[in-house]
Image 1: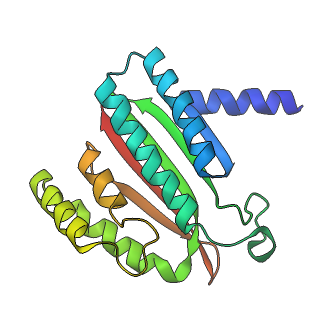
Image 2: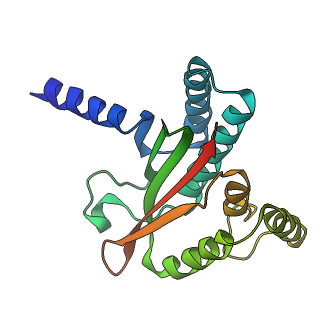
Length: 186
C-alpha cells in the first residue's frame, strides 16, 4: 500500500511539472547539497547556465527564509511535520516554458502584515525601480527585524519573470503557513 501511495505521489508531482521537492528540516548544509542536485537536474533538462543560476538563486533566497524565519515546533503547533529545525517545503518545476520555485513554512501570525506589505510593494515596480530599491536597501543595511541582509524578496523580484505570488493560510492565532512562488523564464 505504501508503495502505491509513493508512486501516486510521484506521478502527481510529475503531472504538475515538479522535478524536485523536499519537505522537512532545512539547514545551510542541506541547501548546498540540494543546490548540487538541482543544478545537475537542470543541466539534464538542458537549461541554460543563466537560467540555472537564476533558479538556484531563488532556491537560496527561499530556503534562507525558512532557515531564518520559520517559527513554531511540533508540540506547540500540533503539526506532525514541523519541528524546531526550521521545517518547510520546497518544490522546483517546469511548466509552460518557465521554471518555478515554490516554498512554504510556518511564520508567526503577527509577521503576516509586514511580509504582505513588503511583497505587495514589490509587485508594481519596474526592473529599474527594483534595481534602485536594491541599491538603496543595500546602502541602508538590514532592518531591525531582519536576520539576513534584508534583500531576499527584492532579489527574487529582480530575477523573476513574473510577479512573485504569495499566500498566507492562518493555522491559528499564533501560526500562519506562508507560501511564496517565483517563476523564471527559460
